[in-house]
Structure formats: C-alpha cells, structure tokens
Length: 440
Picture 1: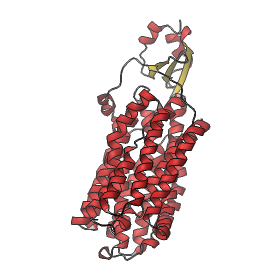
Picture 2 (picture 1 turned 180 degrees about the vertical axis):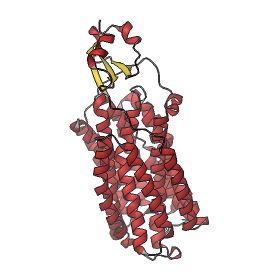
Picture 3 (picture 1 turned 60 degrees about the vertical axis):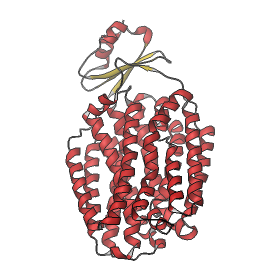
C-alpha cells in the first residue's frame, strides 16, 4: 500500500506545500503591491480555493473519461502557469489572476479517487490517513520555511519555488505512480448528492472539513497583518514572522502523531475533533485580545495544534462513513465545500480588517466555533468493519441481491477481478454466517 499511496501523496503534498508556502506571509507582503486593500488581500489569500471549488467536479468527470494520470497532468500544468504569473506580478490584480489560475488546476479530489482505484477497500482508511498526514507535514514545513525564504528573497521567490515543485510533481507522476486498473463496482443502489447530505455523519464530516479550512484562511489573513501593522498593537518586521510560526510548527507536529494514532487506532476521531475545536476557540480568543507578544504566539500555537490534530483524520473519516458507491462523490462534495469555505474565510477576514477591529472579529469567530463545537457533538465514531471476499462463481446472485442484515453494511461486485465483497461487523456476526447467506 505504501508504495502506491506515497507517490500520490507526495504529488498532493508538493502541490499543497507550494500553496501553503505563501500563506504565512502573503497578506503582509501583498499589502505593498499597487492597488492593494485589506479586502483584496483576503480575496488573494483564499482566491485559489474559489476556482478549486468550481473545477472539482469538472476535473473529477474528466478523470473518469480520459484517465486519472492525464487529468492530474493537466491540473499540474495549469497550476504551474498560475504560479509563474504570481511570481512575475507587480500589482494586486495580476497576483489575483495568478492565484485564481493556481486553483483552477483542481486535482484535489482526483488523487484520492486514484488512491481508491489502487488500494483495497479495507486499506483505504489508512491510505487516506497517510495522505492527510503528508499534507499536514507539508503544511507544517511550509509555515516554517515561508517567512524565512520571503524575508531573504522576496514573495516572488516563493511562487518560483512553487512552479519548480509543480514540475517535480509531474516527474513523480510518470516515474513513480502506477497506472490504475479500470475497475467498475456494481452496487444495489446509485449514489446521489441527496443521499450523501442526508447521512448525518457524512454531512457532519463535510461541515468539519469546511470549517477547518475556512478558519485556516482566516488565520493566515490575520496573523501576518496583525503582527506587522502598528495599528493592531504589534510592530514586528516581516522577517521576524518565523518566530511565531516555528514554535507553532513544533507543537503542531508533536500533537499530530498522537492525535492520528488515537483517532485511527483507537477509533476516537470524534473526541479529537472536539478537542481541536476547543483549541480553535482558545486560539482566536488569544489572537483577538492579546496585549503581549507571548499571548499572541500562544494563540497561534493553539491554532496550529488544532489544525494538525484534525488534518490526518478528516479525509479518512469521510472515506469510512461513505459507502463504496459514494466515496468519490462524498470526497468531491467535501473537498468542493472545503475550498469554497477557504475562499469565504479569506473574504470575511479581509472585510473585517478593512471595516472592523480584531476584537470584533475574534468575538465573531469564538461564537461561530462554539456553535461548530455544539454541532459536532452529534457526530459518532465509525464502526469497525471486516470484509469477506468470495469468487463470483461461488455466489448465488439471487441471494446476494436480497441480502439485508442489520450488521452487514454493504456489498459490491468487483467486475475486473470477479469478486464479491461484503462489508460486515465481525464482532456482531460471524464470517461463516455471512457466507451462508450468499453462497450457492
């Protein structure tokens, strides 16, 4: 599994690393460009996410028609062009166009779909967690390196690095990623958006994913501006921003491992999500009302810990709650909503900086996060399932089509391998009892 998942996770992580690299400093540096306003800065920070949200479904559809690899290549080329435009921009509107173009290469849902093509059902949760973990690590590394590189070589250097990473991702795509088999699953019902949104756990996970990403953008509009603009009570130089991000990075990385283990191995993701939301509330309280540097830094550390605790688990939980015929659609909806919320977060933060105060925005964020906490109390932890695989020649199709049991979650047929797979709760029904219900 690792040889299959790691190259794909590397492509996604390199791409996200390039996007994350500018987040710690983009709002502070972009304010110096011609035509810049706080509102436009917010649009630029979250702008890539708007086009990501718009192009998620078209890229997913294209990957079904022309294949995953060619689709990922198209997305990386668009991302490369957008990065170059950002690198050479000298005014706020050219930078905005480049950011929109970066997001238009929307391969965020194609790579998880490709992982689903290559990895067996029972391993997909671990595969998604591994993918989420690599993204979280790229996020942490970008937070540490972005301010340092920008202070020495300027904002444009970050976009040139992003362009190089896009080229490196293309090389990985065609040298390390296997071509997925064409596998079609037949299931006894079809997937609809209504089915996904009416499932309370999937809907809750979509909300968690969206809120996490939206608050991320809010934070990265606010942190650099609040620290470097005198009217907010702090007078840091842009070159000093690493002093707040490095401690946050260290604590975030330390927290990520235990959270992933506790959430995955011990099947307690709900508890991890609730703790993370509480830490979000703490972080926005500290950042909104801090009078001393150390108080603000503690708020940023709290934010990073909360974000990194969540990140390895979100995609995995969506994959676990979705039935086999829903996984692609569920991940697409979740990622599309997350990108939309990323854009909204940037816009709201920009408007708040232009027309409000940091204290007012902090109170609003505390209220929203508290409501999110109450909402997430409804989430339940996923059941643990086992899988029974049988050759189709041994299965009575009439019995299979009539198979209904409270402890059997679903079944499907892998036509390529001529295998019937049944997903069931092993602690509540024995494998032989499941087998007896469908064999000839």
